[in-house]
Image 1 (tube, one colour):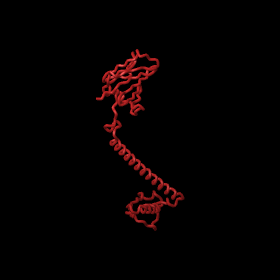
Image 2 (tube, one colour):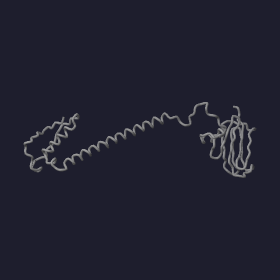
Image 3 (cartoon, helix red, strand yellow):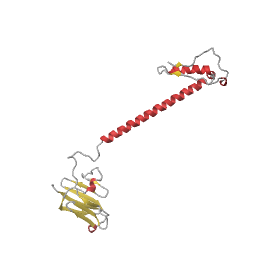
Image 4 (cartoon, one colour):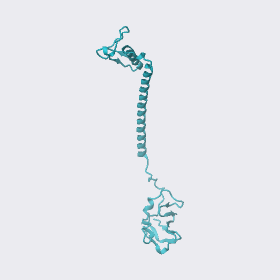
Length: 215
């Protein structure tokens, strides 16, 4: 309940003729009761009515409503700002928790990944196998079966075999064209049988085939 202190309302007391006639401006002191918020508003209106002619103005009600509306809008913005901040905090916490529990894409269950009989560059290439259970890379592609691996290297149409560089070793493979940087040059994933390997060239493709070792 609102309580006005240091002030006695006297309806019979004559109002000051003007603000300048009083030695000091009147003060409004009240105690706010959270259980009855409107009480302090009523007390304030009584104080304004005694100390001024404001409430007799034609637009007094409109001005009071405008003040209330502005205060209400201000509180709405403050509440919405607080809700937005809480939402951002929850989203950030959820994102952090998700990244902490998410497994790297490179992790795969043991025993399910089939071995690849190509050089290390292939392991860093495309992750989606082609129809031949291999990979389609930028400069070449490869396929595999349980017994052998076949590599397909596109070359300029009409390339002759004498211009081809194909160096096949037990643990390494180097493929390219003479006078140009190698297309494939690296260590194989597993050893191969060099004596059982061969290569051939068509109109625009170099074919390389080699047999897997059992070990």
